[in-house]
Structures are given as C-alpha cells and as structure tokens.
Length: 346
Image (tube, rainbow, N blue to C red; front, side, top):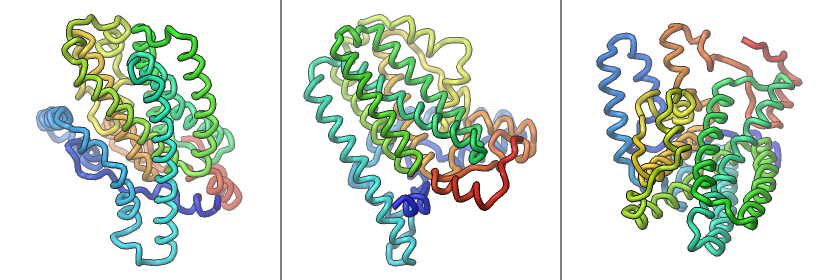
C-alpha cells in the first residue's frame, strides 16, 4: 500500500478558476516586472481588487466536488491506462478519509462550543498550527538525510505557522483560554494531530495537504459565519494590541510569505476595531486554503518573494527554488537515496 501511495503523490489537479489569480498568473506577473513597473503595480492592484471579492463558494468547493477534483487530476476520464485508474482511486480514498476525519472533529467541537465562540477559536488556532510543525519536521528529517532540499517549502510553512500563532495570541488576549478544560483539550488534540499529520505527510504529502485544506476551509467558514452574526457588536469593540501590532507592524515579510497566491505588499490590512481583526483572520484562513491546495501538486509551491529574487538575479539557476533534490514521500526518498547521488547544497 505504501508503494501505491508513493507512486501517486502530489497528483492533485491545479487550482480551479476563481476570483483569486492562479500561480501561473502570479509567475507571469513577476516575470514582466522589469519591463514596466507601472504595469506591474496596476496588475497588483487588480489582484487585490479581485481577491477582496472572493466568496465562500469560489474559494472552497463543496465536499462532493472534491471527488470531481480527484477525477480531473488524473485525466478527463478514468478509462485510460491502469496506473491512472489506480491513482484516481487512491486520491478518492485519501479525500474521503480526510472528509470523514474533518467532519468528526467538527461535530465534537459543535457539541462542546456551540455557544462559546472565543473558546472554540482558541481550540481551533491551537490545532491550526500543528500541520505546519509536522510538515517542517518531516522536511528537516529528509534534509538531514540528504533526500530533500526545497527552501521555499520551509519558508512558506514557517510563515503559515507564524500567522496561526498570532491568531492564537489574539484568542488568548480575548480570553479564549480562560478555562482549564479548553487548554487541556486543545493541547492533547494537538499532540495527537501532530503525530497523525507527521505519519500522513511521510506516506502521502498530497493527502496531508488536502487534510489541511479541509481544516482551513472549516476555519474560514467558522469565522465567516461568526462575522455575519456578530458583526455589528464586533465593530463597537476595540482591537487587541497583539492584532494591531501583527497586521500593521513595520516588518510584514512573513505576512506576505504565506500568501502564495498574492504579490508581496498587495495586502495591507486596516485594524480599527475587533470586526476588522476577525475579517483579517478569516481572510488569512482563505489564503492558507489556497496554499494548501497548491501544495497538493508536487513542486507547485513557490515563495511569493522568490519571484522578485528571480527578477533581480535574472537567472533561474540562482533562484531560491531552483532545480534541487526533493522527493514525494518517504518511500520515494529511500528509493532515490539508493539509486542516485547525494543532494548538493546550492
């Protein structure tokens, strides 16, 4: 079974058309930067305008459509060659497991926190950081063995964990961690989630990234619903200091880094009250979801800042994400370590 997983990793379909730009569009935008700085700024503005219009249905397909994604990722039809049929079945199986796990956790949280929003958000944000820790742990292990070197993945996943950490700090400042039970539950779920995600990521990175996409999609929907119900009250409440410092601070490099579907500096939030804080947290979750979707295609993840560095260097071989050694799961890593020479640091 491990061999089947390894042979089909990162085969998910590219991002569907939506109000947000695709990764190829972002690449084209950056490649034309040197030709016309005015044109680049104009297109960056258009990106921002389009992004602000994203709705839930466009950002996150329904759970039934996830299976359509699996079908399209292996071709227009499953009647092709045998490997494509097997690959299609594996994708469907992975996604059905992910949906079952996500729905199970949601039902538990709904039962425990149906009338305690900040406590629920504290639990969600404690859990939300875990996948990025797991991803980086596995990638560092591969790197230590000389199996894998992709700096963009480590940079983006760290930026994602940094963003989620500030969400957690905001919820703590709002009193979401006041009860011992909530802290106990969140921390123990996080331990189990870390172990599960680490094993899942080692076997099938695509499956792990899809599971994180499901979690981030749920987070988006949760915050979006909360804003619609409590919006008027939130506008009367002050923003926590940690939120003001994070979203409007001087160095926003890491803030730009996790938003891989955007040009750096194209999103600069305003924080005037608690409503603005939750709007930005919701929008952050949408960006995480897009990044997790992009990661499901092997080698598709790019640091937003690496495009600018490519423009400066004007040389793909000198870029942050040049042709480097990597692998698609532990089985593939072991296979490549036996059949190829060790990776070289660039």
